[in-house]
Each structure stands twice: as structure tokens, then as C-alpha cells.
Amino acid sequence: MSFLVALAALVFLMFVAYRGFSVILFAPVAALGAVLLTDPGAVPAAFTGLFMDKMVGFAKLYFPVFLLGAVFGKVIELSGFSKSIVAAVIGLVGSQRAMLAIVLVCAVLTYGGVSLFVVVFAAYPFAAEMFRAGNIPKRLIPGTIALGAFSFTMDSLPFSPQIQNIIPTTYFKTTNGAAPILGTTGAIFIFVLGMLYLEWRRRQAAVAGEGYGEGHSNEPPPVDTKELAPAFVAFLPLIVVFLVNLLLGGFPGVFGGLIERAYGTSYDLTLALDHSIATPIAGIKAIWAVEGALIAGILTVFVFAFPKLKRTFAEGSKAAVAGALLAAMNTASEYGFGGVIAALPGFIVIKDALKAIPNPLVNEAITVTSLAGITGSASGGMSIALAAMAKDFIAMAEAAHIPPEVLHRVASMASGGMDTLPHNGAVITLLAVTGLTHKQSYKDIFAVTCLKTLAVFFVIAVYYATGLV
Image 1 (cartoon, rainbow, N blue to C red):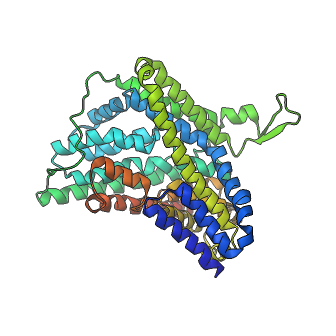
Image 2: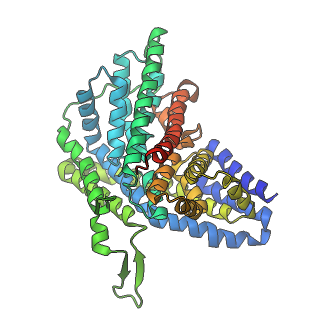
Image 3: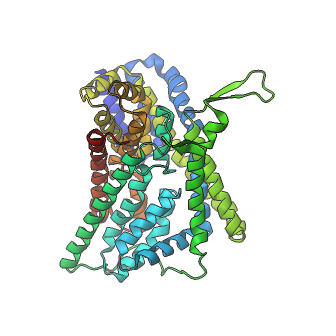
């Protein structure tokens, strides 16, 4: 019975997310409903002592990353730099290679620290124009953008500033450059197979005589590429984010970052306090590195685009802050939910069942990607999984002599696997922006989802075959 209660809570959360209800509202409802069925008297204490404690703890660590990422994406958009970057990449690749150009555009922006939602809005007008010129079906645009923005740069490539690559650092005491060889190998795997799939779909449509189509919704006006910022100026903030992130966080196995050198393993905050506050550095240095990098990126945009931002930043920053609050609170609520579910007797049954999978990396991959699929959120599913089982993963990995960097990369990549099921917020936004429906375009998004999931197990196989990290 206790197992069914825990399972029912997970199913209920998946159902409400799929139907579009607020996770912030229903995550505590699902968690406390499970507690009510287990021990009615424990509901108030579970809410205050578990759910809220976990939720606030998550926000304390990660909200600045959500906020700075949203502001960075917004200033890149408001400055016109995003248009310049897209135009430059298309000019380099060639407009005749529409799919490759859009995938690379999205990859460059997301790896540079721009949020996925901003990338969708920036890339879509160019994608529509290029697909129309190349007579490629519009229904293939969402899958193309998904491959570039929602896959290998989000969680596979080392040093990605996206939140899916940051969350594991606090559990495994790693940097966001963890397992660079495995991550890069996985990224190449996803990119190559993804492009082969998209080209196959394009050829299929061409053979069938299908073109761009007519009567589409949300058709963007022609892209105005006049008065764009020089490409080297537009790319500079992305380069600054990458370099500052690398300098502050360090490169695994090569050199320690400036944060580690300056603060050591712990820092005691005194100021005018009556007692010092110890801050362990190992678990947060990667977060500090990304925050510092995003601040440097934002300042770089201001230096080169101050006249434009002076007029638009006040209003634009409000939208960025609102988006960051919603994204952070959604994930924090799911993290609080995971903390409560992990404390239920029924979850012990789930953990024991998962222990039947003896391989720690396969166990972690299945757990994380399953919960990401249930919640429809990469960061939410990973947060639930790691909140409940990180210690178990670490113990199993230590027994098998597996470095924590490999755990980091597997968790990160697995979170971006089945998260893009139909109820995922990014998928719904992507389809809404492009004016297409699940029926028209979800098939190709799901193909990318399956490739991402397959890539996790490919990376695990590469690790066991080579021992490379």
C-alpha cells in the first residue's frame, strides 16, 4: 500500500503537469496528499520541515543562476546581438543548408548561456525564412530547433552554463566541466545522428513532393538584417561567459579555478556577526563560477549596446525576472516534492526495486530520465532523483571505483532525455511560437528525445570500454 501511495503521487504530478496546471501549486498538494494517506498527523510538519525546507534550499542555491541566465538572454535579445549571431552563423554555413544552419545557431546561443526560450524566439524567424526558401516543410522546424537548443549543448558539452549542467555539481562536488571527454563524445553522437535523421526526413518530404506549405499560423515577417551589430561584437558576450566560467571554475584534471585558489575548501564569513558562518566551497564553486560568468557577459553586452539597452532594459528586465521566478519556483517545488516522497515508507520499495539494477550508472540514468519524463522537466526530474538518491548513487559508484565526474555527466545527460514528452513546457512553447501542433511536429521532437536518451547509454558504454572521463 505504501508503495502505491508514493507511485500515485508521482502519477498525479505527471497528470497535472500534462494538463497544464501549475506545478508550484500542485507539487505540495501531491506530496502532502501522499503524507496524508501515510500518516495524517505528519502533514503540517512534512510541509514546513521537509517540503518548504527543500524548496527554499533549492532556491537559495540556484535562483541566482536562473535569474542571471534570464537577464543575460534578455539583453542579448534586446541588444539585437541574437539576430547578429544567427545571421553570422547562417552566412558561414550557407543559407542552402537550412537545417544545419539552424541547429548550429541554436547550439551556439545555448552553449553561450542564452536561455532555451530566448533561443526559440531568436531562431524561428530565420528558420521560417530559410525553410520557405529551400521549400522544406515547416513542420520540420520544431525538430530542428529542438536538436540545436534542447539537446547536446544543454547538458552534454562540458562547461555548459545551462542549469541542467549546474545542478549535479552540488551533489557530486564536481565542476560544470565534469567528464569533458565523455560529454563531448555524447554531444557528437547526438549531433551526428540528429542531423542524419533530419536530413532523412527532409529527403522523404522532397520525394513525396511536399514543400513548405501554405496557410500556416504565426508566420513571421521577413527578417530585417539591416543595422546589425558586427558579428565579432555580438559573439563577444558568449565568449566572455565561456572564458570567465572556465577561469573561475577551472578545468578538471588540468588546473583549479580562481575560486578554489582564492577560497580554498571553506570560507568563514565574519563581518560584524557575533559568530562566523562557514561556507563549504566544494559544493558551490561551480555555481559561483557560472554566476560570475553570466554577470561578466551581461556587463559586456551593456558596454557595446548601452544606447539600445538604456531605452529597453527596464521593461525587458521585468519580463526576464518574471520568467526566472516562474522557472526557478517550478523546479524548486518539484525538488520539495522529491524530498517529501523520498521520506515516505513507500519510496523504500522504489529504491529497493531500482537497486535490482546493479550497475550504478545505468541505475542513475534510468532513474533520472524516468523522473524527468514524469515531471516533464529536465531540471525538475533530476532534482527529485538526486534529492532522493544522490547518496545511494555515490555509494554505489565508490564501490565500483567510478569517479563522481562520470555520475555528474550521466545525470545531466539523462535529465535531458525523456523530459521532452508532450507535456514539457519548452515543447509547448516551441510549438506555440512556430504555430504548429503536436500532431504536425511532435514526432520529430520525440525522435530527438529518443536520441538523447540513447546517447546516455552510449556514453556509459564508452566509459566502460575505454575508462575515459
